[in-house]
Length: 73
Image 1: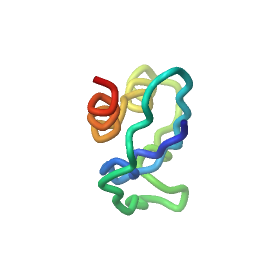
Image 2 (image 1 turned 180 degrees about the vertical axis):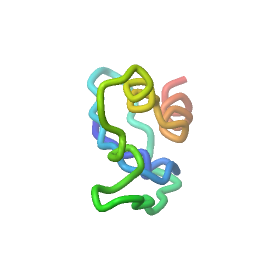
Image 3 (image 1 turned 135 degrees about the horizontal axis):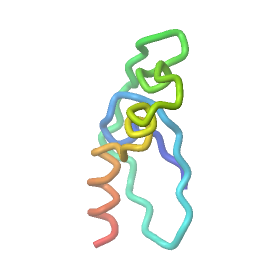
C-alpha cells in the first residue's frame, strides 16, 4: 500500500509504502498539498542528518494514523 499524507487531510506529500496484513484505509479528506519550495512540501526542505531532522521526517501523519486505526480496529 502506498499513500501520501495529503490523501488523508495533511497538506504535504511524502510518499510512503506499507507492507503487511491489514485493511487499507479509504482515502478520504484529500487536500491539495502546500508547496513551500520548488522541491515541494516543507518536508523536502529538511536536510542533514541531525536527530531533530530524523524525528521530523519519521512522524506518522495524524490524518493517516486516524484513518488506519479506524480501518483496523
